[in-house]
Length: 449
Image (cartoon, rainbow, N blue to C red; front, top):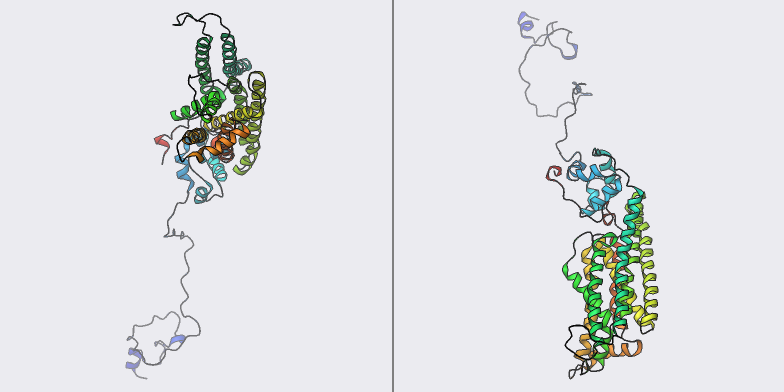
């Protein structure tokens, strides 16, 4: 071994790097880069350098995929006023359902249904600082209920007084002051008394539907009043007009129509039980809403209440129409059925308007008006040559069942449709808010996201 061998590191002396046998502490010298070989590289039995371990104080980096960490937060800002003023989760669920939030929408917020979402909102949003409401005194509440009862009794009392006055005016031996005829004219007196009584009855009915349990939550369309006036007018003189049309009339000289005073008396007296049934249904449904844990439980509990309220109103209508028809009507089951069907239709329409469905309250009476007008139009069109077949169904029904079958069928079918619709929409939580008589307030701009 020479000195050159030692200096260049190619020898076998103690200063050479011999791989695994290198002396500890000796620093390896930089040598020439290894030349590439054509053969396969030898495989080491184990890795010569272990992989570096992560430091213990290194924090985990966030994922590159970013999404809403709290999807309910935006809903909290959007409905903050509702959540702050709610007294229980069911009130929030009712408000969410009124704003169009369904179970499918709640699934996007990682909840199984609307009630579960409402529970989280109720738990996370603090209640607004409001003074506790003072309980009202007992005597004013009782006085208010007594005043409302008298108010809803007013249409029946006015109609009964009008019917009695018309019957009395039929026996007046002298003409009314200011008439242009010299002979006694009881018909003029009856017409004047009937017109005055009809106007007072309409005013009393208007007061009833604007105050108390029959008041609508939202303003209804004006056309709804037109449909109601048509139905009331047909109940008064529709049977007489249908008889005249089937007989080829009206006859000349013209005879005044014979008004169905018994139907008018029964319908106006039924306002009081209708108001009681509407108040009873709204109160029981609100209690059910506070006690229910899920929307499905609430719906299943409200359906029997709606059916019970409707059954009570139908029973009241049957009793009133039968009594009035026995005392001052023609008798028979036809007028009783027609009056009961019309009263039930108006009750269900008003109940739908009361709980926030004015469109349904207008569609039901409109359908009944269409059927009654179609019956009259078919009878009139049957007088034309070649169109005799149009009036045969109505003529056959009137011949076998009487003229009251037309309003009975025309009102019963829409009433049944309204009942089925009410069983679906009036069993939702949005139909029974805290203040059902007031429209829901708009969300302030500051509370929106």
